[in-house]
Length: 366
Image (cartoon, rainbow, N blue to C red; front, side, top):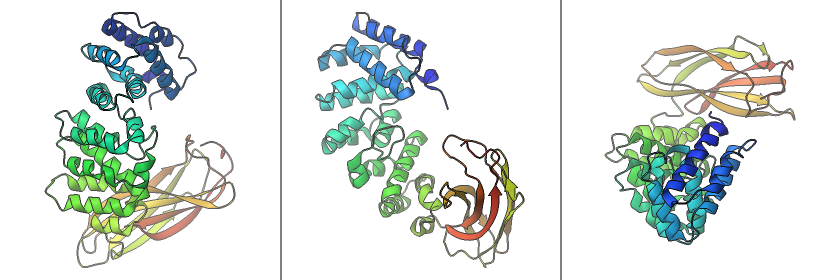
């Protein structure tokens, strides 16, 4: 993953200062100075600091502020990550110029994205903001169409949440209905991610929307739905699995998991074998996952689902494989020594379990 300095470093901010100077006709001194004062700041802190410098350098009256930014859009250097804090500046200065500011964000979004900058407008007046955002679903630029879906995601990563859409996602569903069959995969993937956000809080609403799309004429709906319901599939949601043709009651015989490495330590791999055989008289679709039940500090275990494969098995056909699961240190998980478990899951149903021991040799990180 790129570092904060790679995304919004001194050279990038200095380039932004040049663009703003040319567009405004006066030196962007605060932004230029900020370029030399970024050390030690994380990405979000850099965005805030540069945003505030931009606000200090540009006119306080919104019409004049917008005029400068539209002039900057004529500058080919004004692109990429330097535009991210600029869109955040629009969200600050333009909130009282509601529709014109949203229009400006739509103009800026092709340079990178304004997906986080439209969220203050959604929080301030959801109904009013959605009237403008809905118009973007018919925009000729796929970046603007994606903004309609991505910017309204209830749980957009690295962005403030939209509590109203977490509580009730239905006001944004017309956007997804309009865009799930979009010509651009970039837009369709955003729709799938938005649907996945909805599924975390409202599984039934997500499945109903997916069923509606699958019943339409979009040739891309299946792929969008599979990606959009991925969290429900991992969780073994019967409605999602059935919609995708993966019956939880599929007739299969499961062998394993057979653990080859019964004792490991942090940095090692858990290695296990497994086999799934279709015992029925017709071809079946199977989603095969595995669950690691990690030991917690308090002695209980917590499950985490990982993908293995999705297969069509003919009558009598067997799929077998060996899986290596890394226990290398990572920043998002702390490993604890003790007896862990690995479990297979076929179409959302647990099918077998085996234990293994994580030694206390290097068990702190992760």
